[in-house]
Length: 198
Image (cartoon, rainbow, N blue to C red):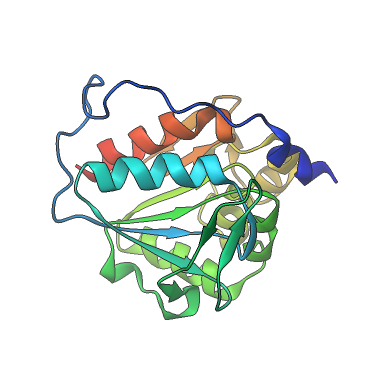
């Protein structure tokens, strides 16, 4: 029940300002490849949209992965067909790996393929992001030990138990790992990922 609160936030309206005009924003991500990982049922639509829209607008090639075959469904009705199963993905093929939140993201908390991908991303010095409850997947993979990180409040105990230094901020960067609290931070999260990929 506590994790469902993450999905209850009002969807934030997409602003009319043009991506790329923000301070320190890259003007292009041409040639960059991004993998966004979503839950089969119950991913957070706004968190997905902000990252996907910004990355594609800046010219990155964005692919989607899920844990199961078939159409993935967001909590507000968005339906998406992933390009890959997460078990098929390798960090070497991408510049950034991004885990989207929402109540369905619990399916990755103890998913060995998700853990292996997160660890591989860190070992290969790729940009690694997670938002809302998804940072718990990174914590369980062992990649947040000794790192500054944040998440939706319900996952703070899990992050701390796995050795993360929990920060009460919307978006936290430690090296190439980016974590964020939820849909209200989705745009800042996406912009931060883009800057790190440049």
